[in-house]
Image (cartoon, rainbow, N blue to C red; front, side, top):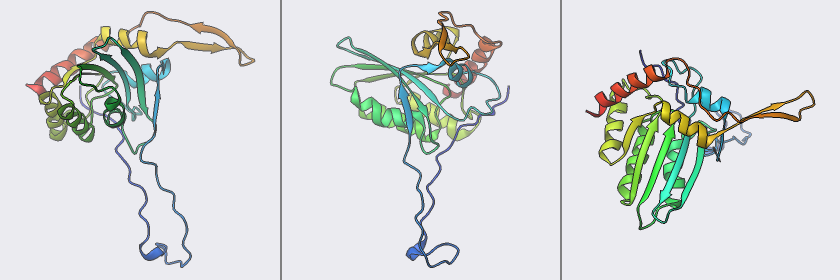
Length: 230
């Protein structure tokens, strides 16, 4: 089983021409559109089709170039918060947005436990954001449960995974029970429309049905992760 991931990397905004001149030599200056810093979809439930596609722990992940992150926050006061983030623009990844902008909202002087279920393991930059977050917030306990390993053969990625592990992150691969948990707590039931576009039936499937080779692929990735963290 070889590694063939397809995770988007940040894309820089177009550079502005020097001295107000166009790159093609025209004297008239035109406005250039810039990419926003990031756009991340945030909500409580994932469409079932997105979950089945993005979280599938297959060998070849062609087309799976975005990251879905489901999170559960448990505070010492007994409060529990759930939600998910999804990459909507290549200028940022869901992990970086979550650990930079979302996590600080839940931090207090009391212990805070966060479990994240992510469609693929973090890239180098996102791993750095996770490590910084753990070093900054000493009351934070983090569990990161991932469906696939992103470019695990690359030495920088392997080092990044070891880095977040040494920073205190409990890192593991998703198993069938984890998929069932995400399905139950984070996935929106399918809605079937009739010819008039009205809701005809809502498929409230309570039991997650594993796809072929889920357990086999999970075991493979588990062995690779153990090898990396050894």
